[in-house]
Amino acid sequence: MASININGNIVSGRSITITNGRVTVDGKDVTPDGKAISIEVQGNIDSINADACDRIAVTGSAGSVKTMSGDIRCGDVSGSVQSMSGDVTCGAVAGSVSSMSGDIRRG
Image 1 (cartoon, rainbow, N blue to C red):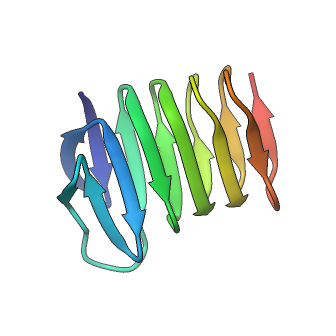
Image 2 (cartoon, one colour):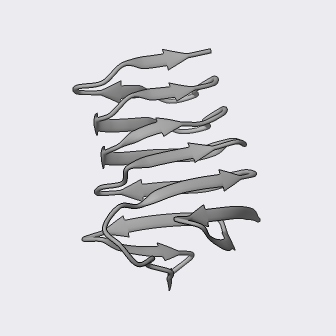
């Protein structure tokens, strides 16, 4: 189980979802105070699905990562990585990597 830092609050989990400013980890609401949301994951995570997030960083591997808005930095990804408007920097990706208005760096 990964250690997840959400705006300075540490929780553990495998899956993160951000919808309409509400943050859930494995189905549990962990929404931080404030509108800006920054996520740092220490370890491996199954999935991250965010409609809006300032920054997502994963030091381990990820199953899949998707955000509508925000930069993504992660290790190897067994699925796909998508960002509508943000830069993507990641390791090896088994699926696809896409960003409509950001740079993509792999390797």
